[in-house]
Amino acid sequence: GYLLWPLMGACLTAAVLSAAAQAVRGEVARRAEVRALADRERMALERYEALSRQHQEILMLRHDMKRHLLALRGMTDEPRTAAYLDELLGQTEAVSGSVSTGNRMLDILLGSRLAAAREAGVAVELDRLQAPEKLPLSDGELCSLFLNILDNAVAGASAPGAERPWLRLECHVKNDFFVFNCENSSTQAWMAGQAKKEHVENHGLGKKVIGRIMARYGDLIQVEKGNDFYRVTLALPLLSD
Image (cartoon, rainbow, N blue to C red; front, side, top):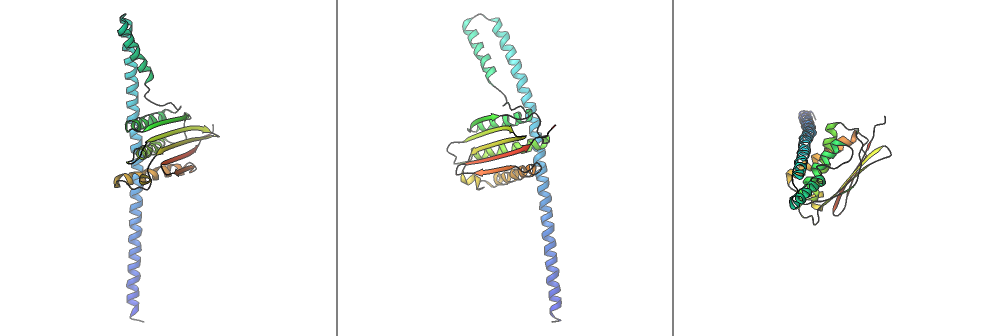
């Protein structure tokens, strides 16, 4: 029995060291994930700021273009030239650089990601688009939350193997809550994470960002998966005056 005591002590020491090493590895991984999530939120805000500047430049360009076309229209009486300028003016009025929900930040974010979806060949359907001027989120949270949802939706809709890529958005205010619904076509392989490694990592990190932000505001979020669709619905409590 006495001979077993050193062996038991060695085993206990090894177990303690192993547990300590595992705890250290877990803490290092946790801190790395926290930094990665914080970096992702920071980058989302930087993306919004860049999109906002681009949006403002487009509006200024459209304004100047319309003014020049009106000036040219007033300089000519030639029927064909006048008709052509009228057509260009009509196209200028018809083209919109953003959607209109009532919330400027959300408009810019939605406008940029929907444009990317259309460029990727995704059919976009918009139902009700109504948002309060101010949401309870900070600017960083708002950018990170909706950019991650929309980026995942565009990636899912344009995943390899999707027969008819589509994306549907709807948002409105109901009973002092802002309700946002994003639904997209997808494939079983994409929803199961069977894609390129870098995409799986980004997709997983995006879902963690979404979950962390929603946990601060009641955690009212629902994810639904079907054979060929993926849907995210969330509700944010609105601040009362």
